[in-house]
Every structure is written in C-alpha cells, then in structure tokens.
Image 1: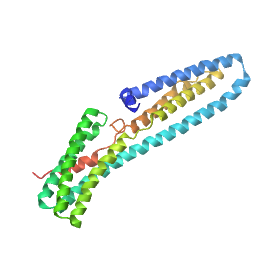
Image 2: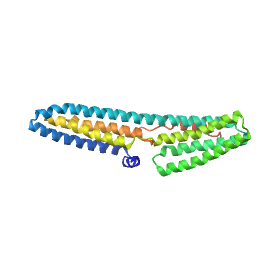
Image 3: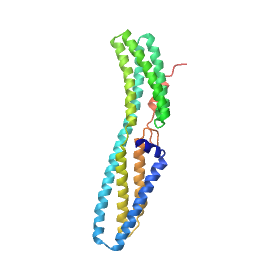
Amino acid sequence: MDSILDELFDNALLVFALPALALAVCAEIGVRLGLRVHASRDAARKGTIGGIQAAVLGLLGLLLGFTFAMAVSRFDTRRALVVQDANAVGTAYLRASLLPEEHAGAVEDLLRRYVDLLVEYQPHFDDRAKFAEGLRLGAGVQEEIWAHAVAAAKKDPSAVVAIAVASLNDVLDAESERLAAGRARIPSGVWAILLIVSGLGCLTSGYASGAEGIRSRFSSLVLPCLVAIVLLLIFDLNQPRHGLIGVSQQPLWDLQASLKEPS
C-alpha cells in the first residue's frame, strides 16, 4: 500500500490537488444537503448541526496533529541519523590508524569509497533500482572493511586495535539504523482514517453553512485547501526522499570533503 501511495503521489502538486478536489466535493455535497434542511425549515435538525460539526472538526484537528507529530518524529530521526552516520565514519577513519600498518591504509581507502557511495546513492531512496545498486556496492565495501578488521584483530588482539574495530562496527550498525528509519512510514491505515475524517469534516462544515441558507467560501474552498496543505506537509515529511522538505546531506558532504586525499 505504501509503495502504491509513493507512485501515485510522486509530486507535490498531485498530493495537494487530489485531496483538495475531493474535499471540495465533500464540502459541496454538504452545502447542498444543508440547503435542503434550510428549505424544509426543520428547526430540530438545525439545532444538532453545530454540535456535530464541532465534534467532527475537533476529531479532525486531533488526527492531523497526531499524524503530523508522527511525521515530524520520523523526519527528525532521519536527519539525526545522517549526522550519526557521518560521525561514525569520521571516527572510524581517525581510529583506522590504530590498526596494524598493512590494514590501516586499506581501511582508510575503503572508508573514503564508502562515503562516496553514501553521498551518491543515499538521496535516491525512492529510485529502487539505483538505491539497490548503492546497497549492493556498499555491502561489498563493508565486507572488505570487516575482513580487514578481523585480520587486524587476529594479528594484534590488543585493546587499542579493539577500539578501532569497535568503531568500524559502529559504521556497519549506522547503515542498518538509517535503512530502518527510511522504511518507517506512517501506516496506510492511518492515512485512510485521516482522509475519511477530513472528508467528513468538510462535509459537516458545508452542511452547517447550507443549513443557514448561505454558501460560505470558507467551508467550500478555504477549509478543503487548508486541510490539503496540511496533508501535503505531512506526506512530504513522511517521505525519505528529497521533497519540499528534504533531509540535508550536508554532514556527509563535509565528511567527504575532509577525507579527500591531499594532492
């Protein structure tokens, strides 16, 4: 379901336009139903509209806030893991010099290659083929790094070498955490409930407006657009790709620059 959503909503304009249109239709349906109530002069039914509208819009606000908090939490986690990844590789690079001489240089070269792969492929999480290629190449570099770590530990099982090996292990762990964070999305069930309640909120708002015998621009246009904008923001924060609000890769770029071999 999540992959289908990603394919359907591949650009910000579509993410905004489709919900806005659907919610505007719900609001229009509500207005027409409300106008019927107004024409019938049914005072009893009119008296219940305000309470229903307040309850539905209150629930909608709660759901939007809850879902927005989930999206922000995932966004902050992905952003923190970029820094953690860069710090792990930077520390491992510095401690690589603690390894025996025949392994130190090779590990440093491999870490530079690894950072280059992160910079090149990490932003392409939504491109499955390219990202899979990056994972394959990265796994190959990781295997080589760990082979050197094992050989160094066997040759010199000292505390100093153990510190360097532990730093290399942190590099491998950082990738697993980053991948898990990228795959953690807001469940599709939450999206379904949010869209249903959004539609009901616009419908009841339009219904209340129509019951008073007026066609409110706020109920018909402004509210659907506002809800669609919030949905767009939540969706964008929920994506691991670069969107309107992307996770900066600046820590990795800075690390890549600092690890360049002197000419």
